[in-house]
Length: 581
Image (cartoon, rainbow, N blue to C red; front, side):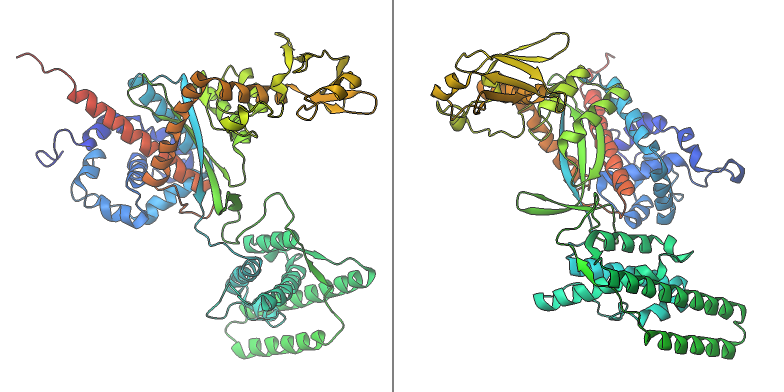
């Protein structure tokens, strides 16, 4: 298309010949109405530009600017010189459409499967790791959270229903929409006092609008309700309850009257004098009501927020706070898996996902294996660190015919402690038997070769209760190191298959250097995380919602695989023998 401008081995030729044809536009047709015609700009072009953005860590305006000036982008997308223009809002609107379903993830799977097939890549061995995708929001204290939550709601209320805003504004402790708004307070006493005042304001706003037909459906109001329920509680007593109901009734009455005034104002917009009179009458009535006995109940601040998903910011209710060592993390947790067979000439990312920051690695591993199986990319061995590997996850992987390899969690990996002669005994030190068919565990003897008196599985807990002779255990030299509990009449060991599997894995990892060497291949996942997070811009989210942040991770992973595929194909071309003349 541009003879002589680009070198023959430029990446754009590989993209247009190999990758461009793999983007199936028909899979995106559900986003468009058949009766309104086709989109003005090619879907293939928009998908390609999203991939290019992830390749070079560009934002929307930078993508618009770059497309009109990059010959290689034009060549890769079959775009004629002078026609390379796309508005950044068009690209962003298409990106928003993709969050409706998993079409973008299916594109990732389709492209990855083709790359793996063409490059003859084995998926038998894979490795997984996780990383934090930081949110763009600042870390808010309770003081900042209350203040910003109220401000965001009042801003929406003023925009949509100015009459209601003017009414509620005068009842609050401060003007939340004034200039120079500060979300911090260094004086601890002042901060605590203002937090209590803002808790009262939260309750007042909640009481005023929770039954309003329109306002109660505002997303900002729903967030305000969640913040109040998670952070505050209403003191329960007879007096407070009565006052609570009275305050709510008075607020509802005011809001209803204010709504009527707003409606009349719209109907008589050509008669401002009449509108001013009605609003003045309403304000006088509000002033009279404020003198009545409508004291708000006492609001208590919870010591710890309650709820499964604590809101950290009104701007991004999906983002969560968590801690890793001494570092506070705000945002989400990303999971990436790639092939790692040493015989592969190139490795590809095979799976990805994004969860809340508090999501544990051990809970995700089973989902990863299921997705890999569904996509036809199931490994024989999956390498993970101690965060992913425990007794439960090992057994669950075995049911899928996957060997989950790596050190078991919850145990020290200090070789000095493990090799000490007086180290505490673990379940793995007991002699056991595992039934080949039922996979049930049976204890044969303790580390000192004492056989159990009896053992049975508890119907309540599902664990195996093993009894030993108390007198023998009481005289044992290892009683202080043994997990068997010596009671009044008998000695008891409580164990299940998951505990034994985790302990046995730890014992294998610590005692077998060959196995440790094999598991060392997982360390390559650290460079994968660095490539995806830092090389393709997913260390920090560009978006407010979890769905769009996940899309950001999807296109970063696609871009990473595209880059690896192009480099591999170019290398294959360079290594081809020259044709005989």
